Amino acid sequence: MGEILVGTCSWTDRALVGSGWYPAGRRDAEGRLRHYAERFPVVEVDASYYALPSERNSRLWAERTPDGFVFDVKAFSLLTGHPTREAAMPAGLPADHRDPAVLDEVWARFTAGIEPLRRAGRLGSVLFQFPPWFRPGARAEAFLQECAERTRGWPLAVEFRHPSWWEPGRAEATCALLTRLGMAAVAVDMTQTLPSSMPPVTPVTSLRLSVVRFHGRSTAWGTGSKEDRFRYAYGEDELAEWLPRVRGLAERTGQVHVLFNNCCGDAAVRAAECMTRLLDGDPPTAPRVPRARSAPASPPSPGPRPTPARSSSSSTSRRGAD
Image 1 (cartoon, rainbow, N blue to C red):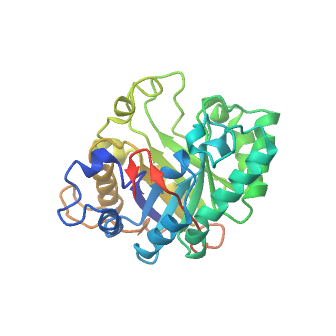
Image 2: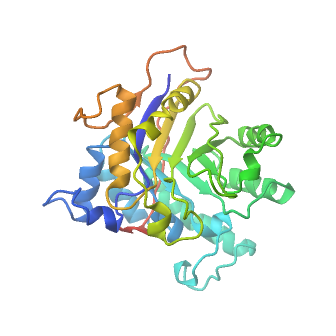
């Protein structure tokens, strides 16, 4: 039975910092991370999508967190085919993902930026979140193959944003592709009322890792402001719907990361705290400090339990910089 680690998709979000969740005396960069890491065993680094990660930040993050704490690092936007600001690029390089020389340099800098986390055993995964226009087909498969070759040995997770990847009749081929490339499929919770809604499927494509990301269930997904898209407070009943799925993933993988991306105010940390209590079987009001959890005992998983992945991480964040 694999571990279940629950956390959020940022610890530096401005709305979180302003919510009062961080106590007085722990609101500087170091204090925030230490406070967060005392309560959760995993966090997603969102900053590395918007700016290439820095080795200095990665070293500091590893130093400021306890053994066993891991960072899931989001791939830089250029590496997933997203539009990238020229200001986010290294000096002299255009934001052109089609230029092989540019890609080689960006890959090299991203790799160096996360190396301190990798060396410290703190890299939980590198998340490749692909844009909505990234559809199944030969070009997409070739792109994924290249990503796999450039990241050989890293723990990888892939989140698709086009629902056709998981449509009936296509899902089996998607699973086979990710399994062959050694990439963990990301399961998603979001509103199911939009044409772009990703179904809440939980495929297992890696014996090492599974990832579940909770985006909230706002109907403004894809159209509204950042606040509109992510403004959502999960109810306990909505989180309880996922308990069998999360535990089912833990029966088949070495580790499950459950991450909350409804980052408005303290909604994400409160949802993560609630999910931790539910996984523990605690009553709703039990004041338990969240930690890495193992799901209830059941038959052993089909593969060996992995050692903590070595990793790296990033720099500033769309939600603030630490």
